[in-house]
Length: 193
Length: 272
Picture 1 (tube, rainbow over the protein chains, first blue to last red):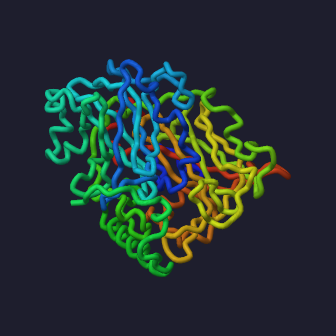
Picture 2: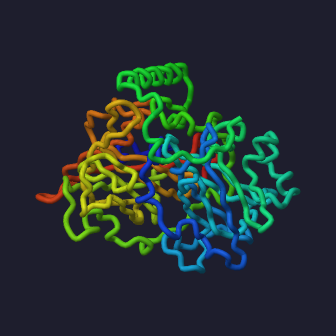
C-alpha cells in the first residue's frame, strides 16, 4: 500500500494501519536478554514487578508479550536511548517481557513518579498475545499513596472492581505483583485513546 | 468465576478444540462481515479496524477482552515513546539475507516504505522490528513443527530505525505460506510480522504485511479479522518495479500509518 496517494488534504486525518495478532512465534523476533532488565536487578532504587497473564478460562498464557514504559522516580519522562543495548546505567523507562511457560512476566525497573498534576503514578502497559487480534493498552498503578489514588480522576470514574484491576499489590519484600486478565470477573480494564 | 489454572503446554494449544472445516470458517467470516456492513450502512462510525471478538480465529475466543476498551485522555508518559537513534541498530540487521555464511533459499525481495502519523508526518528515529517464516513457510521457532525444511542460512528476524523522513527498508526473502491448526487445511497467506513504535506510546503497533494477489486472503481468519476491505487492503504491500533491482531482487512498497487512537478529539490545532 502506498499512502502518498491519499495524503491528507486540509484537515483530513489518515486512517490508521490495522493491527494484527502477534502470533505464536514472536519470541525469536522480539525477545532479547536485556528486555525485562530496565535497571540491573537488586541495585539500590530498583523495583521488581511481576505477574501472570490469564485467559478467560483462568489458564495462564505462555505466549503473551508485555511491555511497560514508566517515568523515572522524580516523574521525568525518560528520553534516554539504549533500551536495546543496556549499559547498566542509562534509564530508558521502557522494557519488554515475553511470558514464560507458566504465563509469567517480570521487570526490573524503578518506581515511577507522577507525571501529571493531581494524577497517581503508573506504568503505561502494552499487551500482545497469540490469539489476541490487536494490541491492548492498560496501566499498572502503584498501590501506596491512597490519597493520590483516591484523587485520580480516571480511577475515580471506575467501579471498585474495575479499579482493582489497575492497581498493583505490594509484597512484603517491596516488590510489586500484578496480574492481567483477558476476560472474566477480573477482566483488566483496557484503554483506547 | 474462572479459577487460576496452571498454564497449558504451548504445544497443546496450537490446534483448535473443534477443528472445523474451511467451509464453516468461511461461513462464520461472512456472517460477521455482513453484520459489520449493516452497522456501517446504518451510519455507525467505527474507528478500530480490527475486531477483538472474532470467533473464526479460534484461539481468540478466550483471549480477547469482552468489554470495549475505555476511551481515556492519554497522560504524559503515553504521549512520549521510548527513544531510539540510528546507532542503536546496526545497518546489517535490516538485511535478513546476510546473517549467515551462505545465501538463504528463496526469492530475494526488498520491502520499503514510510512510517507516518495520522497527519502524514514522518515518524523518525523509531524502531521497526520484523520476523517471518522462510521461503518454505517454516519458522525457526522451536515450536513450529511444520514439516518443511529449515534453512541454515535464514533466521528470519530483523530490525531497523526509521530515518529523518520516516523511511525503513528491509532486504529479505519472500516467506512461504504457512499451515496451522485453526481448522482443517488452514494455511496462512505469506506474511511478514511488523512491530512499530510511533512518536507516542499510544501509537505502538504490531501487525502483518502481506503480498498482492495471495489466493489465501479470503480463507484466512487472521487477515479477515479486519472486516472492511478498505482496511484489509492497507496490509498488502504494492509491487513497485522501480524498487526492483535488475538481476537481484523484487521490490515491494508498504507504508504504515500510526494513529493510535479511536478518535481525534484530544488533538489540538497546534498539534497539526
